[in-house]
Length: 466
Image (cartoon, rainbow, N blue to C red; front, side, top):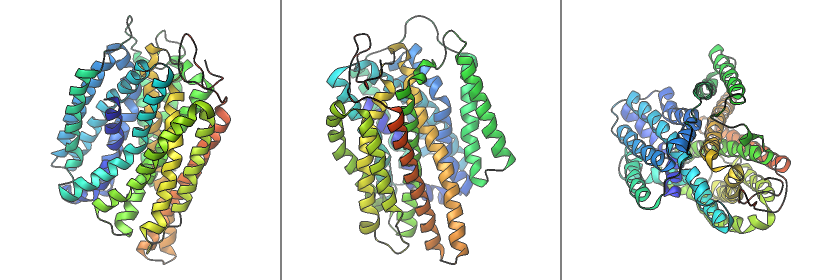
């Protein structure tokens, strides 16, 4: 049930990518409104995750899971039946609100249900595999639904997931909560929610210019509010985010790596779909199926990574994995306007999928190891928040790079298809650089080779933690 939840949350960030061209035509969306169909979800999700994690800790993780799943299904139904762009964007935002309650509750349940040993490794391997393949599954499923049904089913399908999740939670999931104290930090909640929202919105505005007053204002305002949040958290009795969670060197590195993976996933999958459909002329179905090369490569490699983790330690995997994935991204930079999927895209996706598998298996485990049970929701929320904020920042930066590359290519007179291809290639190069940064973070912030457990907080852990 927890893996299903992760699949729903991750695939919903990409499943609408395939449906957007048809949705834009039917609802007469502007290009700005089309972008907000994605941004509204990420904005609400990323800004409210820390609050959702703390609510799950104190209100009850199973209860938060079920309310989040029910609300997510209802918001999906509204979006699938939307008759205007405003309705669709509002529904996507509401999806993000309930996902911010659902996702940290699910990951916290995983953390407290499997506290140590081989079962914990297996559980996180399953969870990580789903997290790593969910984006590509979303693209494939979106292609099937758009081709054979209607773009609306890319949202309505979540109703099925919600029903299965609710029934499964009633049957298999046990309640878990922090007893005593309310734990609600009002000022911290306001500061981090408004700060993350301002930061995400500022990066969204950056697509039209990094030096625009609105862009600078929101980015600076977001940073000031986040600084105020840190100041508050260091002084309140029951902080929304206990700062000791991020003071650990390895855990902080895992959060940063999670952010880079989010940036790569959201940015790469969006522009990959554009290249496959607009330049190579694939149908939504074929474009979705074409993306499965990365998914299958990740699924096949993930068990290998899980077996290597206890002996090699997370540092080796989390350093080598991004470098392998970066090589795959470099492969994709050689796409051409009149190229072929099998020679220019397929191999790159396979290499990316292999590299990602070596990252997703250990990263969430390292991020959550040694966290006390009463703080599991907050830590789990930060894991998800890092990925969503990283994705939003990455998408904004990659879009700016894309627009600049397209403009330069168009001025050179290469034609529309060539200009678009140059833009996509520039994005893939930027994602390769981002992955190299992730490898550097892993090499410098993760230390130790063995995975140990401690009597008080048994868990799989790099040797220096605990």
